[in-house]
Every structure is written in C-alpha cells, then in structure tokens.
Image (cartoon, rainbow, N blue to C red; front, side):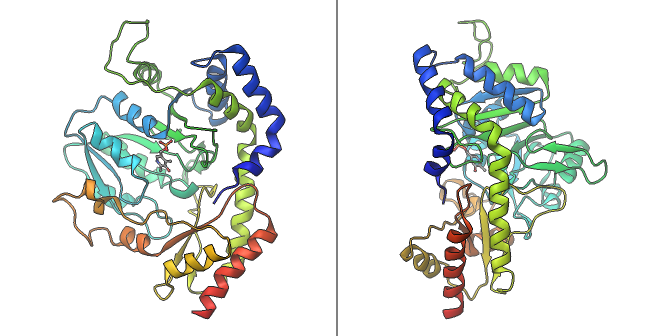
Length: 374
Ligand SMILES: *Cc1c(COP(=O)(O)O)cnc(C)c1O
C-alpha cells in the first residue's frame, strides 16, 4: 500500500546524516531535535504550540486528559474510524457516543452530532478520515452553541487545508478545534521510522498542561502536579521527521496526482464510486478508497489483485459500534446504515509518493478487468 523504501532513497543522505548526528550526540531522550521539530511543525501548521509524544493514540489520550473530563462524560465521535479514536475515550472511563458518517465524504455527520448531544456531552472528536477534513464550520458552530470541546483526529489528514465557507479563512487540519492530534506512524502522511505523534493547540494553558501530562505530570523534575503518562517522541524520530517535514506538501501533491489518475481511469465505470471531496477542504489522500457496487464481490476482487501482486486493503471492515469490545445496549446492527454499508463495500488501493502512471495503469487495468469479467 505504501513504498517507504523508495521514499527513503530520495532523502537517504540527509536522513543517514541526521541519524548519525543523534547517535554521536547520545541525546536520545528529549534532545534538541525534538524542540526543533516541534517548532518547525508549529510554523508549518501556523499553530502556537506543538507537543510531540509517543504515538497518535497517546496524542488523543493526552488531549482528553488535558481537558480534565470526568468519568461518565460523553464524547461524540464517528463509528467509521480506526479504533484508537474511541479506545482512549473508553480507557479514561468517559463514554464514547458514536454517530454515523456522510455517504459522500465518509466523515462524521454534523446532523447526527446534534441529535446525539445530551446534558453530559463535553466534547466532539471529528476524524479527518482518509485525508480530507470533516465539516469544521458546522462542527465548530455546534460546539460553540453547546459549549463543547473539539479534538480533531488528524492522524490521516496532516497537511490538509480547511477553508471556512463564510469567512474564507484557511487553516490547517488539526488547528481549528480546541486541540489537534496526529500520528507519525511510518505509513502516515508524515511517517517516522517507528512510532510518533503530536498534539497541537493555540491555548497556552492547555499547552503547558499537555507538556506536563506527557512527562509524568511534572514541570519541575520530581514534582508531579498531575497524574500523567510517559509519552515522548524519540530524538531519532524527531530528527528524521525534521528532514521529511519540508517535503510534506510535495508528498501530498504526489498522492493528489495519483488520485486524479485513478479518478480518471474509473470515471466511466458505474460499478465503482470514486472518492468525493468536500468543497471546504483539500484532500491529501492518505487513502484512496473506492466504494463498490453491491454486484461486485469485494473479497474475490482483492484476491484477483493479490494474484497480480497488487495490494489492496479494507479500511475498515467492522464499524466501532459492532466491535466486540465496544458493543453495548446503546447500539445494534442497523443503527448507522451509512457506516455499515461502507464497511461492506469499501476497498482502498495503493496510494503513495512513489506511484508511477505505469504502475497505476496495471492497477486500474486489473480492477476494471475483474469488474468487466464478473
Ligand atoms: C493511525 C491513527 C491513529 C493512531 O495513531 P498511532 O500512532 O498508530 O497510535 C488514530 N486515529 C486515526 C484516525 C488513525 O488513522
């Protein structure tokens, strides 16, 4: 699905150099590269504070901890996402309240959020799924009217731009709500060579609390003001990410070009729905996800592709409300028809910075061959 080796080859000299520097310095924990990378990412995002941490899941957990929510408080999020989004809510003994998504963009449905609000609701976690932002105008309006926090899960949309439809103000995904969270998992838009994550905010007080929470709740060594966690970005990872950050937009452009190729190739095939982009956001195509017509059998298609050496994947096969660990009397099958239908019919094709038209020709040719034959 991605070509990390090809991407590395292009920056090999710089990356090898920076790794060597960190090893020579032996500043493996909280070295200068971490502060430098945080500053560079903050400049890129035009956000006041970036706090690096161990991974994207920790980033979400830290965000919820910093907002000092109480057990039983309700947090609204989407049922069509990676498990981490809801997992941290449940781990903190908060109540995940899941809602359906929009059929066009697969992002959280603002109308469904409105209906799910109760007196116990404290926060909304929109996920900017597959590389485009959720409807942040609607979501921020709902949050304002109901006095709710907004935590943006931008693990898949780092680098995407949201433009407010009324004011025209352009903001980076993850910098619009109260706190933004991202992941540097190797296959993400900005991938480390191991785990990594970060939290962003424009709020000085929250930033200080986030720094402390990620560091055992302390500001002064061995003086612990909060019950915190240990969640750090390795100096090595920060140094590598700092080399890759200036290429983030160019990586997005490469994926956008690949997505345009796929869109064109599938334009006349009525059994395939290509991704739809909302007007208020750019799409950085963390994933390129098709929705197949009922008449197309997904598993045989994936097998057909695999036999030709073509990767494909299902993001996500089971909605969160039907996961064993998250099933409860609140939900049953049929509650979120859009999400459930997507789980049955989506398939993602390889999308990354190293795709060539020749490779894409083979991929699209194979997909169309299967569809026409069956
Ligand atoms: C990858 C991902 C995460 C978690 O990131 P990790 O770094 O793997 O912990 C959270 N939310 C979404 C939507 C993701 O895609």
